[in-house]
Length: 505
Image (tube, rainbow, N blue to C red; front, side):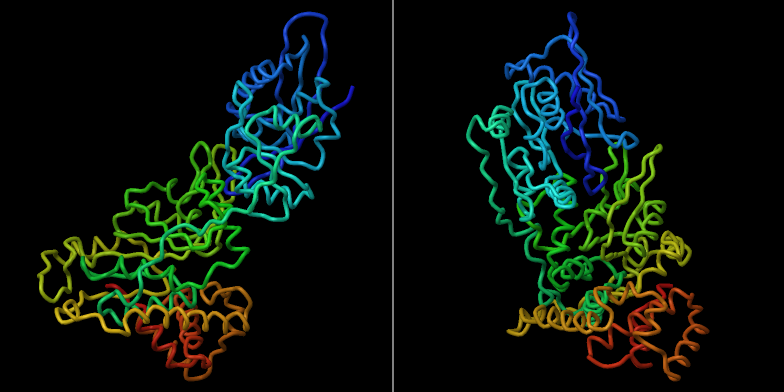
């Protein structure tokens, strides 16, 4: 008795994992057809037995009495989602003798099957294409929207179908072949970000933004309402260098797995700005379906947290580990999923509960105790991981009423060019690792301390009570400032870096 094997996938976090559907049919003389599914299927996969029987009958493939065994390999991995419907159906058809097993080799199948045999799109087309490429499979067959996602990877031939009869006709050679899906022409996710020249005044904040973009540093802006914190943050994606092809695949794969495919390869870096009422699961991912959180949706892009002290403390504390590692391992009830989370954090906050502490025209009504309590909502360890911290004052009346000069629109272009030049210098020195991610050992090689720099850091540690992490952050920021100038790092760059790290007392 032959065992049929068909390759499918199930989503695991922000990626896909190959699943082999094994099928074998044991005929009986009388009785009904019983379908048994083993290999840790979730309720969605188990309910597929009913859809499978209806689809078989609707397409004239009513099974004989007996027992149809479907095993999902690897058996130790929990299988979830409706993407296994199509490979389970095809394995069953072959096990019942209606299709030769040789037609199912070298291909990956995915899609939800309706009770009438129609195929419905499922998320994760690009993630499945990456699995197919890694497994040496030449074709991927799926419903049209899912196949269009897979077509973003030209190494895999993506074919689309709208009904089971089309798939069976193509595989058996008794009907027209399925047409390959052309590579979609998508132009990415969000619209063009705000230009830096549109921000009135704020020269120091703009410089901090350029440093953050050039070195990949986290940034915290503290200032009263209307100071331009959000507008400054929205300029950051436009200052960052374009996504490389590998980064485009990473971003698109995350969006595809989350059901947010942008219509082609993502061209723009993601921008995520969750509300301060977001839960810990909403930020880092998880839940019953183990969905990616905001930090994963912001992978290779910008995560903007406005009103930072208003976020739940446990949600903010959950960001500390992924900020350093670039990944988040979520464990829930015996399940573990690892999500990518290489995001660029930009945060904004008011200086006090009323928002007007230090404002030149509106008096603050908060007591020192209230201000201290408000700022203590952000823990020291989290604050320590933000390399750049700046107090932002509201623009003056003359800056607010000033006419836009001819040079203003070009300011963002010049800043982006400076960021790209600094990143190129860093790339020659240390590869694809941004300055903000350099280890202490790498930092010793990239930016060795001379005697004046060492003396400056010793004084800074004594006066500011800097932690070891803060000292390393100062050195990384100084290296970025040197890269922007095209010069070797010096004590002057360390002094400038310290000026971009306000204690926010």
